[in-house]
Image 1 (tube, rainbow over the protein chains, first blue to last red):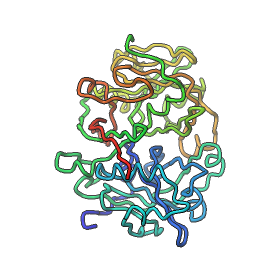
Image 2: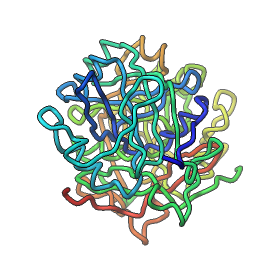
Image 3: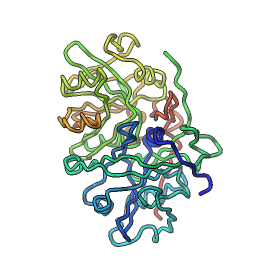
Length: 191
Length: 191
């Protein structure tokens, strides 16, 4: 999409630093899926690494294990309903991209399906195999190998939440389909 | 503080589900500390478990390793400056509680120093020893053994962000002292 611009890898952690709910996208050959995940965080700036909880019973986990890769897409407020739907249904028996009319582009490095329309940013990630934490905590570590953001809301390594980009502002799941929206910027002053 | 009420452990993950920036508090004997952490997430509902990134070079990490415990306190907007200050200074040579005039109460199970004034909630956590992930990713897993929240913003297992509790709404670090505030509630509709 014309507004999406590459994000330098040293700035990739900032895309998820503030705890947005994300979409985890996956593919293995012709199979593909997208699920919602509220539980993710950066774990390292350089190399950029993240952790995300993907339940071992999900179809996403099966595809990620098979391909060793996944995408993280950061939905804006206009995708609130879609995000909740993607987190409430399984892709094992249905292609959610077709079902919900989701447009995806292949990631530049790993070919993961990435959403841009309605999203603020995406990260393409290579799984770092950690059998113990995957088994014990459903926690998957990964290295970010490419990232991009809609320049209307993230540019020069910084988020800018403004009145004119409310549709792209990130959403944060509170539970049961209730989300908070990021916004109401606060600038810390030295104490 | 009179507004704080216990949170049932099965609801503890909701306190951090939406990705707030938190304060990690720690103590070992007479030594104590508080630092800010943007990188944390739940990893399991029951038993309630979380993961938090604590850099191995920090004083907090040293205290957590010694005591096997820490607190997670969730600052509201009125503590934005304090949160940034706690994330920008080390407690190795100074008691931050004294320096910044922070009032803390001992946690009910592990005695961790917990902040209530200006905070929306806290969780008291017992470290689960995971030497590999602590070393490789600075990622510390822990079980939540007690939790409480200010009933004006979290009650009955649910957050309620309203105009009249903006001071307690959670903050989400964007980088460089810029924070977003949770708010602007969105309710997902079925697709």
